[in-house]
Image (cartoon, rainbow, N blue to C red):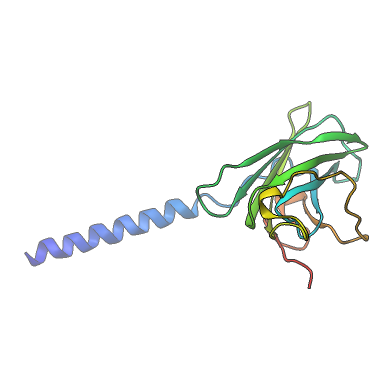
Length: 185
């Protein structure tokens, strides 16, 4: 009996060690071509339940704007059970793209995964975490996102949440491809 218990413990430890080894091999998510820089900003900041504008820029490491990309955004809440919000950005020119009406369906922590694919199949991807607050002031939560007019929000420079990924897949100053933006006090 003692031999079987010791063998059982070794089997459990071996399985645990193997699981940790395999999990550790996944590493950071892929970010694509290191010569591409993909930046994402949200307006308003912090975003509220309902529509928000996503402003996306794509350029190379020399700062040359890149046009003709297909850019898709997938928004997921950090907990299971929610249907993802999917959108395709519209090109505005000179490396600038926008999703004018991205719909955050619920307050809480969200992760936006943005992927840009150029006509020559080079691609870049970034992940951005953001906190979505309740319905905008004066709007009932059940009508959030209805009746929103574009341009209804104005912001001072630097007010929008922004995230970028550049060479090596790191966010500006973040040291990793995922970065959380906290609401302003």
